[in-house]
Length: 168
Image (cartoon, rainbow, N blue to C red):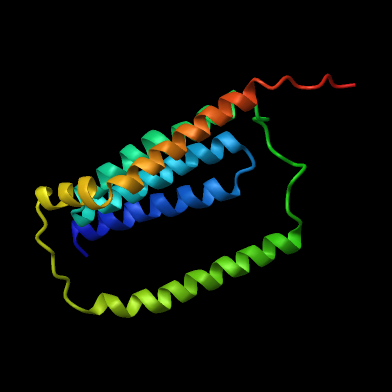
């Protein structure tokens, strides 16, 4: 086992633990922060694999924009910060979702593990080709995504300005 294998396993473990904690926590803000940890773990795994550009885009777009937008929307809407005990799932739903998650993990493992036996070829891609794809082919979906994030931000601001009814 090489140092790269160890680094990949460590970053993968950080991503998995962060993802599990993001899904299982009862605090919405904690879930967003654990999502940051999970995404940084995935970015670390991408760095180990040599995909620096994809790791940078993941950190900039998801950690730097989406998670900050989620936290900003939570602050503006004055959502309850504490644990949400009103909407918790019962034990049968928890067991069923755990079984479904395990089944999906086994299915993915059965598909992906046979692919690890062959040699890996690295594609030679230049930054000019990547820039041509981003600013040529994918420019409109990227702009639509930024427009969607702007609409979500304005909607969160509008919802925060609605006066709440007085509690009895």
